[in-house]
Each structure stands twice: as C-alpha cells, then as structure tokens.
Image 1 (spheres, rainbow, N blue to C red):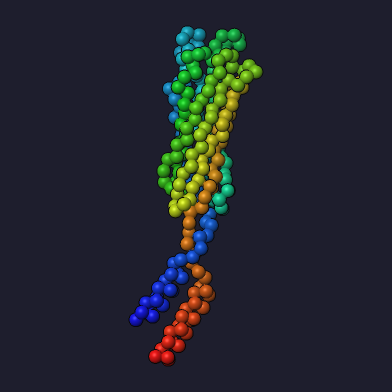
Image 2 (cartoon, rainbow, N blue to C red):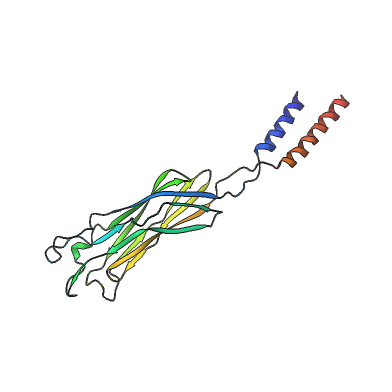
Length: 214
C-alpha cells in the first residue's frame, strides 16, 4: 500500500510541479480620463483678479487599447489625449501667468484596465506654472507625472507612466502613456506527454519488479 501511495504521489508531483515559464500578458484598456485640480479653468477676466490657469485636458482622441507584451522588459506607448495651454497674453504686455494662477495645479489621469486586471489605475502629476508672459524664452508650464507599478497574478507587475510635458508657448501637445511589463507572473509548466509516459513506464517497471520479488 505504501508503494502505491508513493507511486501516486510521484506521478502527481511530476504533473503539477515544474519550472516557472515566461508568459505573455494581454493588456486591455477600455477608457481614460483626466481630473484637473481646482487651479485650472478660464477666468471671467484676465485683467481683473485672474485666479485660474487656462489649461485644457482632453481624452477625445483616446482609442481603446488591446495589445500583448511578450515578456518582461517589453512596453507599448499610445496616446491618451491632449493637453492645451491656452493662457492669453494681451499685446504680450498684460495677462500671461499671474501669481494667483500658480496654485492647486495637480492633475490625475485615470486608465480603465480590463486586462490583466479589472481596475482603474490612477497616475498623479504636479503642474508648475512660471510667472510672466506666455511664449517668452522660458518654460511657461510643465507637468511632472509619477509612474505607478501595478501587481497582477502571482508575482507579475506592470508600470504605467505618462510622458512629462513642457510648454514654452500656448498650444496643444499630445499626452502619451507607456505600459511596461516589469515582472512575469509565475506559471507552473506541465511536463511534456512523452516525458510523463517514460516516467510512468519506469515506475510501472519498478512496481512489477517489486511484485516478482515478493
């Protein structure tokens, strides 16, 4: 009886156990959106008490994504939408970015992942506005995104990052997203049928020899 138990355990272990193997991951993203901070908007008057920085965030050009990352280190970049700096200057003298337009400029991007997990990934950024005329020699507005690592499966992870942006004049820029396959989930490999057959024959032979000796 003990031999039969050992034989069954050996076959079961051989079937279920095996070295970890690399597995491609299917990534699906169904939606995207921006949530800007309270410091963004359009002032009623740029000359009288301006308090809002005129920056527009849009995902109108976003298209649902469905792609495969073959192995750790692979990545895919796609467009999430556009960001437009539209802060006006009047004759390049009045207007521009005022002190009261530099506060509360955080922004959050949201990506609705369908695969390999079903959840919303949030990526945050800090917007920095520089006082003065828009379109001068310096940077007028910049956005610094913080990448996010997301776990899935058993040991798998993806990094979601947005490209940092810098505006030296009013206008629209494309906001891109990169999804990088950081680490692969552990997947147990099932031995090939031929290997199982040979192992099984060997164990059967051992069992026959044992019965004859008994």
